[in-house]
Image (cartoon, rainbow, N blue to C red; front, side, top):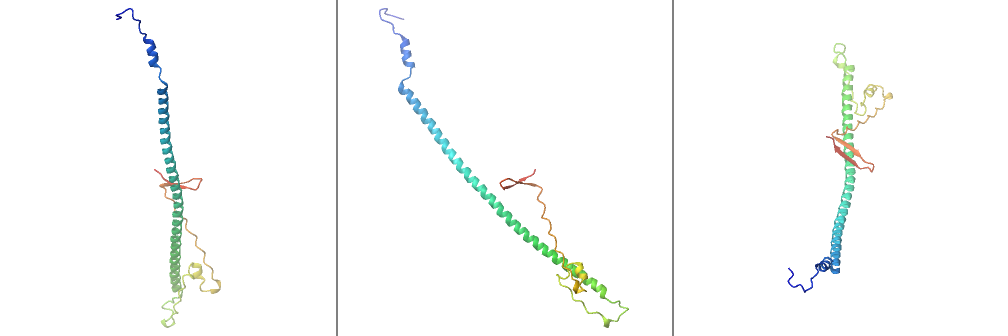
Length: 185
């Protein structure tokens, strides 16, 4: 479609080379925009990382307080358990002493009771004084009541073993002293 052959032709290759090469201002703008975007992403990540570290520290402090709380509760439960255990032991000792007292009284009545055919009622023996609970704790002491010079001291009672742990839970103690309980399925 050339109409006039005397007019020189325009070369399109030179224009394509000029349009294809980016300008210096555009390159600087793209680099600045990319750097700003990377900086913004880094700042956002730093803020979230800082918040996460603070949350982790607070959770760790609360877990440490939980361990101390567990130790305090355990100590109080042991104290209460020991109190109940000692009360049960006292009640058991008192009950055992009463049984021994009753048994000793029955034995003395059986030994000192005269047969009705042998003796008249006028010569009935005087009622025996019942021993106190500390005097008649064991049968050996009740037997030796007749001879006051050979009184034996009662044997101290052995403590009962603590109750077995619940088999539905497993106790895990770590090297740092923390104790965890895990339910066994």
